[in-house]
Image (cartoon, rainbow, N blue to C red; front, side, top):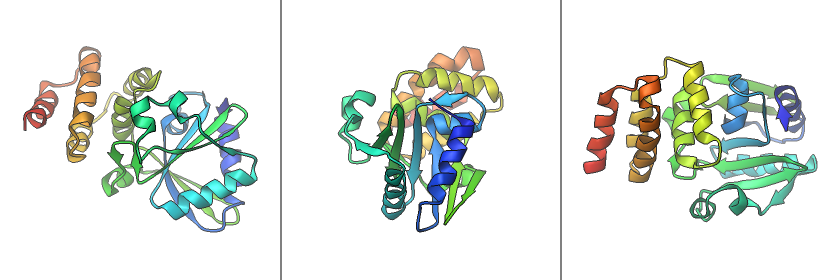
Length: 213
């Protein structure tokens, strides 16, 4: 398991190994730790805006002893592990990097998502490694579609820690993605959260309207 201090030290080491400035978005357990929603994680989830940055980052972590892994199917559902947007995975011991480019499975990491990732962590080494921490609304949307064990509990944890979740943003982004499966997955998770976190009917109505279109 990686705790926040270890994670920061690791990113500093990586910044010292890269040969170009890199910006990426941290999500999953990495984002949850920076937001103080959890204390440790096994996997560091990052999405890059271009293939060159992802490949440069991969070269840097290989210098630190991480090796490319083919355990994708043991981590993600079969249908996701076969997608072209599935990540490259690198492991060292029980630590793992999941490295995506532009998309996180069905989710396109667009400029709106980037701009909402306003919590920025810079690690300065030989070059700058900039992490944008995914916003809570987008983090909920991602965890609603990944179907990994523990993701729904993470959504509950986010909602408990942030009572001001803007469900309009969550719903709008799901609809803007233009993928019915994303809307269906989100609707299912929101129904489970509806009573505890008082999600208003108008947000479901917008999802239902897209579902019928």
